[in-house]
Amino acid sequence: MITNETRDLPKDILNILTKNDEHTQKKFCEILYNRTYDDCVGFIYGFSYSLDNNNDDVFWIKIGRTIREDPHCRVDEWKGNIEFCKKTKYNKKLERLVHLLFNYANKIRIFNNHNQVEWFYFQEYTDVINIISVMNRYLELYMDNNKDDKIDDKIDDKIDDKIDDKIDDKIDDKIDDKIDDKIDDKIDDKIDDKIDDKIDDKIDDKIDDKIDNKINNDDLYMNICKICSKKFKYNYLLIRHNNSKRSCKPINITNNDDIYDTDDTDDTDDTDDTDDKLNSSNNKIQKIKKQIKKIDLKITKNINNSEKNIKCTLCNKSFSTKFTLNRHIKSFCTSIKELNNNKKNLTDKMNNIKTHNEISELRKMIKKLSMMQK
Image 1 (cartoon, rainbow, N blue to C red):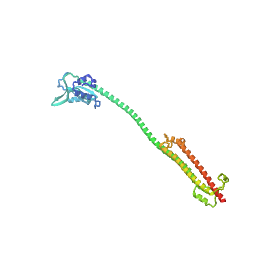
Image 2: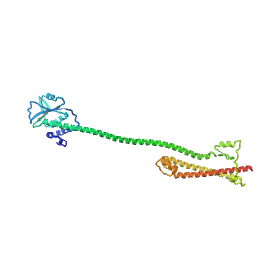
Image 3: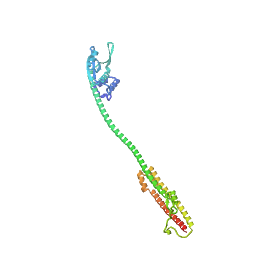
């Protein structure tokens, strides 16, 4: 059985190998090309007995191995005549291969009623010593090359491992960097959100305070003395003023013609009319205040909602960042501009009504004074 592997064998060995059956040839190849065979340095030897009638064509020979420093000791134990002795680096493997190679001539001999193995009986010319020498050289060459291959493989493996480790380290570093960046981004976002929330809360508080001040400032001084028209923040101050020992002085108006007509008409009707007008104007003022408050609530609600959605709820425009949204709300949103204009107009209207009310109250007081003089 000649295969691609056995084609490289020396001709002397190949010719002997083909004399064996296929099973023996297969076993021979398996052991020969087994690179992990456990072995050591030793000797392979051959000997015969002096009683054997050996010649070049027909002869008996026993082939064995030993790891002793003096292989002749082993032959002396058998009381034989040594035929050859070869030192080899692969003691066990070479003996096993030689036995398989000469398996076709393997015989069991009986000496002194005992079976002896590892004897070979050749019935034709066979140069055993030369074949074993060729086999030893081929085996050592093959195994040494295999060792070099193993060394090369180890070096290649180390280089590959280093390269793989570097690649893995780079990949791990990139993954770690991405994870760290994500974690840092989340932490930064949380910190930014907290800072933004604090700033927004402060801004909202200031805006709310301003709105409350604007709405409530007009209500702070609703306690007015009917005689001198002096305003007080609290009602108890007005009561104390009225109960004071020093009576309050009425307002002196020099140009009465600018304020009211001096025609002698029915004073009671005029006072009733002025009271009605004052009441209606006060109602108007309260309505206007409510409208202004609604406008302010719309604006502040838009700011609060926009911080969460990054979207202006008045004009429905979307933005990528809070900064651009805030800039839009402060300077560019047309809806907020319209609301602010409406608020300004309502404020002006309310101020006009207030001045009108003050004039009406003055007229009413003057008429009272004139009636007292009469």
